[in-house]
Length: 129
Image 1 (cartoon, one colour):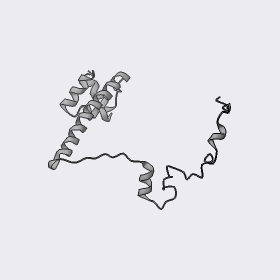
Image 2: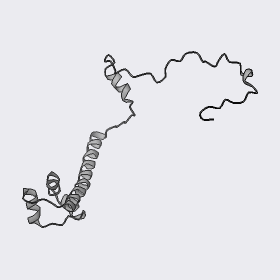
Image 3: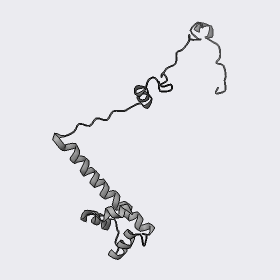
């Protein structure tokens, strides 16, 4: 019942619980907190909803305060290819070296064909033809 403890720790958390539709007596709340009784499924959902609202607000407030401390903080997010990251972390380990994106190719098998030789011939019917 950690979430329920969180919702009873401050006035704004208790208000969020009421806003989520959780209306129980102090006696019921005490019994839940002591583990003598357990909330119904509906009340568990209300507790969960209220907890998420309060937690989101508290975490956002805390992060904003930290990011703005000492004149602000620069945050950069870059896309990362995990295979490159593994290789960069430890290039000596087998399997950590990423496979090249293109394979070496041999000679073009059609480069010596004379395109004039195929003129006027009907197309060959294949499985898709």
